[in-house]
Image 1: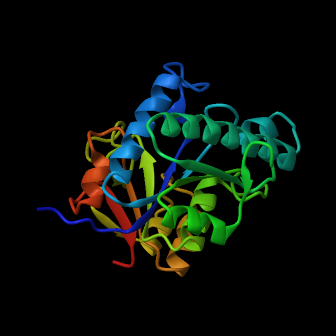
Image 2: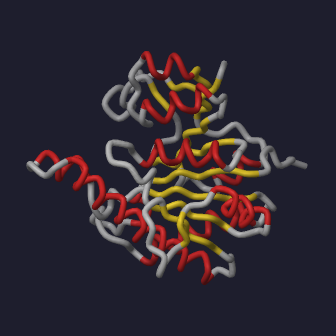
Length: 239
């Protein structure tokens, strides 16, 4: 019988996980599908925290490219992540999972402010915690927020949910000979300038020896299988 590999995990996903067929907005059907994947992990007895991006609603890089001040564009993106967090909270609560949203930017009427010890207490009590608002600072991606929160709550692993099954040295769609990695060191990832995850986030994990697993979130039971010990995706670690 497979054994559970981790006690506490942080799952980082892009806002596109909640998007509809056109790639934009919040699709309640997709939110329900995401909630079911999270529930499958939760039902294993694993403590689950989430960080979700806001790319389905707004990208700060687009705003700044059009002349908007980068801090303003990024703050709009942070608010977008809170909208996604609330949508996911609703989907999880409808599946019977008690969920708390904590935000780096205070919005006390709709979510708790981020407090590390309170977040850990929620996890210990069997609640799912969703961290919204990124780090609360412009110029930092939600990948960096995921790495930061994972270390603050002492998660055992950071899982980066994507639409690809692993990390490759080039785009496997464009290059059929692209090399797939089962494991890769932090340094090699950074030196190769692989773009599947923000370099700041990877550097932060490297400095604190937090393993990262990149996997296809939509592959059947991929997250659950990983947590039960199956070799899934690519692990970034001190090889």
